[in-house]
Every structure is written in structure tokens, then in C-alpha cells.
Image 1 (cartoon, rainbow, N blue to C red):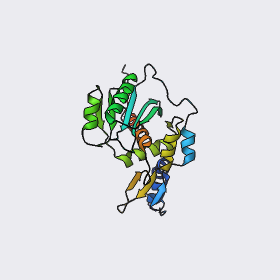
Image 2 (tube, helix red, strand yellow; image 1 turned 60 degrees about the horizontal axis):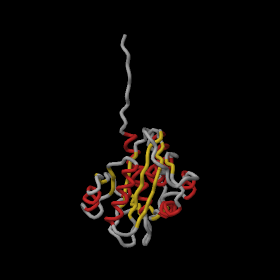
Image 3 (cartoon, helix red, strand yellow; image 1 turned 180 degrees about the horizontal axis):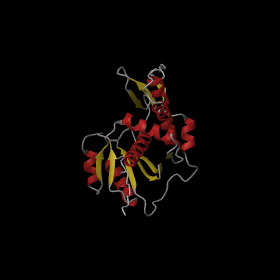
Image 4 (tube, helix red, strand yellow; image 1 turned 135 degrees about the horizontal axis):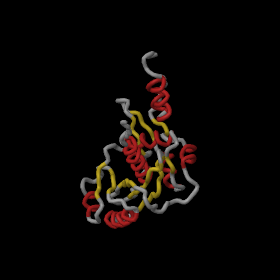
Length: 226
């Protein structure tokens, strides 16, 4: 109903996140809980094989981790890189057990891909920072929270810019993600009660890191004078 709003704004929003855009621009009511990612979209984004891609020369890799202090939650890791505008997920791992031992294992994997910095959330204070630091890996805190990471992932998958590995557990976690609308109208995205999203969160974080880097690339213009 706003004639001053360009149609491309609505079109872009619908392409990135149809559920949110339908509520914001098309006045369509939303249920309090809905599935975030369609299973068919996950399948479309998944390469047939291999599950893990080896390091390639000349490629810059980024990594995101979802730390765990033990117990039922897994300790997730994802390594990815950009190919043009596409984010390629090279590796996803999940481990259970001693956080210190898993951190040491992951530090070795990161070093194998030439990665000296890993990003994660604010989980458990400083221990991920200190533990990764023991192995020469710098730990940085993500600028986005869990919901923000998943929205970045959804937008990238909607536009066909993500290549996922054929990992069944990762696929199940992505498929199970739920979008809840709070009283403030803000979307909250998480796994269902009793579920887990260690791999899904690591993948979303890696996609968000690379998407942010792509957006920040400078527009280089070359001019000639005669």
C-alpha cells in the first residue's frame, strides 16, 4: 500500500526470507513456530560427494566452531571457502568427550587448512579463547548471535549460494531448526526442545563469515587519463 516503496525491495526480501517478508510486506499472519529450512532446499544445496574436501593450494579458508563443555552437546567445527559468490563447505566435524582433547584435534585440522583463526560464540566465557590459544589458534567471538547466523544461512541457501557436504546428521539438524516469533516480533531460531544443532550452527557461522567478507569487498574502479 506504500507507492513509494520500490518493488525490488519486496522482491529481494521475498527471495532472501519469504516467511519474514510475507509478514512484513504482504500482511500475512505467521504461526508462532515454523520450520526454517525446507528439506528440499537442503537436498538441492548438497553435493553428491565427497563428504570432506581436501585443502587446495591458493584457497583461503575460514572456520567456525560451536564449542561444548561436554555432556550431550557436541563440539562442532566447520571449514569453508568462497568460489565466486558461492560458499563451499569443505568440512564439518562433531566430537563428544574432553573439550581440551577435542580442541587440540580441531587445532590440528585448522592448521592443515592453513587456518590460524576460528570464530565462535560467547559460550563458556574465555575457555575456548584460552584453549585454542594453547595451540596457536586465535579464537574470535561472532558478531551475530545464533538467530542472526541462521538468517544469513537461509538467505544464502535461498539464493543458491551454498554447497553443503553430504552429511546426514548435519542435514537432519538443519531440517529440524525452528523459527519462533517473540512478543517483540523478533525471530528466534534454534533447535527444538531436546534437540541439537552443533553441526548446523557451525555451518551457519562459516557461511555468515564468508558472506560478510564478500559484502565488504571494495568496489575497485580503474580509470585512465590521457
